[in-house]
Amino acid sequence: MRLFRSILLLMLVAGTVPAGVFGWILYREASGQLAQSARSLSEERAARLRAEARATAPAGPGVAHAPTALPQPDTSLGAGRMLRSALVAALIALVLAMALSSWFARRLARPVAECVRGALDIARGRFGRQVQVTVKNEVGELAYTFNHMSRELESYDRENQQLIAALEAGYLATIRSLASAIDAKDPSTRGHSQRVAELSAAIGRELGLPEPDLKALAYGGLLHDVGKIGIPESILHKASSLAEHEMALMREHPAIGAEILRGVDFLRGALPAVRSHHERWDGTGYPDRLLGERIPLVARIVNAADTFDACTSVRPYQTVKDTAEAVGILVGLRGKQIDPAVCDALVRVIQSGRPAPASEEAPVKRVRAIGLG
Image: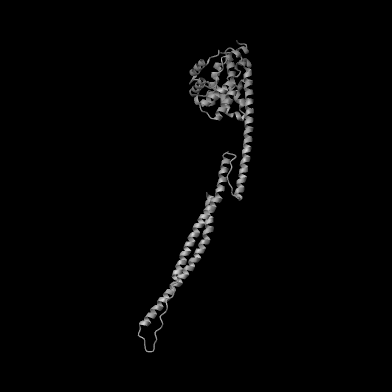
């Protein structure tokens, strides 16, 4: 808009200055004509008065009367017409200058404004934006160059997105390999990490969380027990209750897992779920004894999903619960171990069948596989 005003002002100055000079010259000529007409009228009036005075005076013997002066043509009418013509010409020139200046300025400023809007779209990440400029001048060449740049950026962005998708697929494969390594240490929990990840993501969708949080929940669910790599298998496989020192070692696995993942940048969002998934709503959990909403939301969600899957899968220290019994346990832990809002969302997910809980046949197969049945 500032460019349009500047061009318009320059064009108005370029158009009105010659018209003004021309009008000023005509005005000077008309003014001179008027002044000359005024002098002529004054002289004519004076001559007429003198003639009338001589005509009324008594003539002496032998004195002849002077002839009366003939009237001179009135030139003031021509001078007035010239003045009016000058003013009309100057006004017409001004109007034409304004109209032509506005048209030219708009014609020059519109393509530039279109390029500016396209550049702003590119800056906002909308690559591939094309500007419609058809003028055949330097601005048109600028628009052509801009369109070529926009297409190239769109192509580069598409390639980058493909590379990112490939990297994320590789990351996810790595995460699943880690989860499988964790589950392999304890056959009774085979598939546990995958189920917790799916259930955690379902709870997040039920709560209306954004996509980055859902991804953090999926990664956190897969890796929440990665710290068990550092726990002796004798403790992991023990069927009876753990001794005090064994329980102390087991309670170190969230901190161990968080330390393992600390340097991995793309797992930054999942780190709170790994460290804090054993914290309790009432503040009696571990390792940091966090209370209520001081526990990260992703950790609260993974905690609830972990608890439900533990209830509905085979563990050496408990019998398998059906869905109704597991929901009853969750409700009993509501406001104690589990965040009430997360508990309610989990119950809704379970009742709607998203995702389906472990089947009744799967625990039996796992029991037979590990020789416990």
